[in-house]
Length: 122
Image (tube, rainbow, N blue to C red; front, side):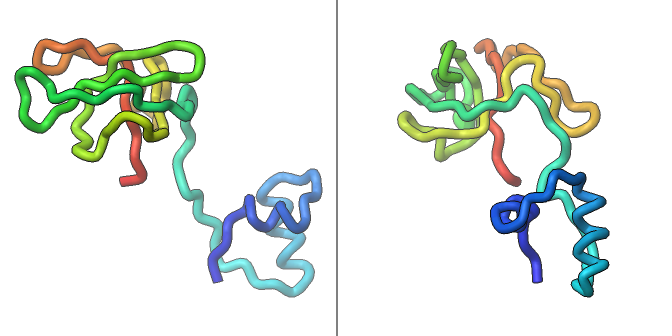
């Protein structure tokens, strides 16, 4: 059976690390086959809201979005065909770190500046 640590901690939440929690479960007779992180380490990612999404002027498969981080607005170029105004998305701002070595920087895509990246699970 697979379940998230967050779900487990909604039922029992001792102030221990993940490894200690696994050890305690094992000591009670519950077998823990593996612990698999759902996502790698990341920082600088917030819930953003797309305020507008327009077709990129020089690229058929790109869109230019205005994204709100809650405190600021950013222009972001993305390749998501489903990007549209009103949806909330994981938004990696400039300076965000995804994984061990992927840092988000300001970029220019086909002549349009992008100040971050819209993220997805894939």
